[in-house]
Structures are given as structure tokens and as C-alpha cells.
Length: 273
Image (cartoon, rainbow, N blue to C red; front, side, top):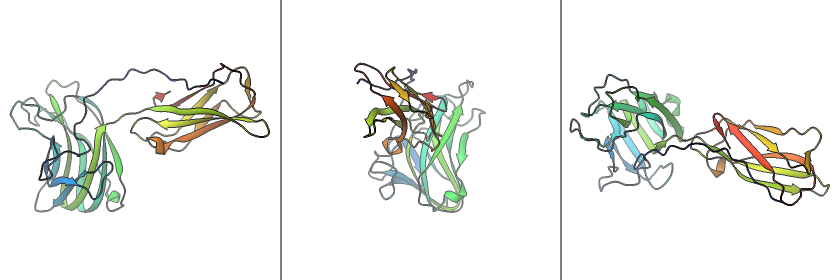
């Protein structure tokens, strides 16, 4: 029988890439292409994806250690700064160790000079102290909107560290994307004649999603068994990619006819398919 997943069409705005956000390209000294850093260099020992991440080693001899997009101060040039003045950016980070350190990830509004003199505040987040030494990668999402300010021409994507000491890895900086879909939909009949519809729900973005709700739409030849509801809820968080797949299932009776269409729709926090 024919079956498939119903999809909701959505307008997609293509954003220019945050180039070398995974720190895979750099020079012989380990300085990543399109970035400017104090205390940072490419490293292979701990990565979120690919071959390299960025390691920032901070010591108290420096007031600040930092990461910015590549730029030339007061040159009038964009350099590698971004021209998208509103959005959400995803950072992955691991704090290998930290001692009395403040670690900040975020966005800095810049003028056409360029210089940080727009009168607008930075947008960002401070890494929780309890993440230090836990051996895990964490995702930070930074939202910003400078679209209403004529003084802002470009933005930096940045990390700033101050304090006594810190060893931080950063990787996979990119635009935050939300999305959900039905990766597969199939029917299985057991020995007792009960048909089970199984939908594999996939997070197609790069944000962890807070569960999902699935709704099945049946052809006339199939009905739900008594007690089964057409709407099912996934309560577990949906991690992104195939490794985060979750399965929704419905028990049915009947025999599907050739050419009939079975459909499942899914939705979660602002996204649907």
C-alpha cells in the first residue's frame, strides 16, 4: 500500500554561513581562518565534530582571552564580521578546567568604523560554573536583534574569558536552526492480525526540542484499536540528527488497500511537518 508523511511547507531564509565555524581551516600557527584570537588556537584532542576545535587557554597574566571574527579596527572594512543584524547563534563548548574564571559567549554590535561604539549592549550568556571539568559538550544559544539600530553595521561572534585560569574548547558555531520531520513511516502486522503504524520522528535542526506531538491520519480501510488515540505525545527531548530519533506507534485494525495514503504529522515548539 502507498503511505507517506505529510509535510508543512515553510518559508526558509538562507543566511550566509558563519565561515569556519568548526575551526577546520587555519594557518601553520593554529590560528583559525576568519577568526581573531588572544590565547586561542586550533586543537585536536577534544572536538565536538570534525578534526579540530578551538582551544582557548586563559591565564591571569592576560586580563582577557578572547575570540572574535577577523577584523581590522577602524579600517571601514567588514573583514569576517557578520552582516545579519538579528538571529540566533549556536555555540558548542566544553570547559576542560576553570579557576575563578568568567566565560562569556555572545555577539558584539559593531559600527561601520568598525568599532564597538554603537551605544547598543552586547548579547550573550555566561557559562555556568558547574560546567567546568564535567567532561561534556554543552550548547549555548544566543539571540540578538540590532535590526532597529542604524548605528550597527556588523556583528562579532565572540568568546571572552577573564579570571585566574581556564581551558575552554569551542566548536561548531553556526546559525541556530529548528526543524522536525517524519524520517520514515511504515506498517507492521503481527500474527494476531494487529497492524502497527510506526513513525520515526527526527529533529532536523540543531536545537534540542522539548518533545513532540504526532497525529495520525488514516485511510478508510484502517481504524484505531479501541482505546488508541490518534494523537500521541513524545515527552523526551529530541536531540538533533538521526541519533536522536524517537518512534511513535499506533495499533490499528483492518487491511490497507492499494493506493491509499497513511499520513502522520508532527509538531513541536513552533515547528511542524
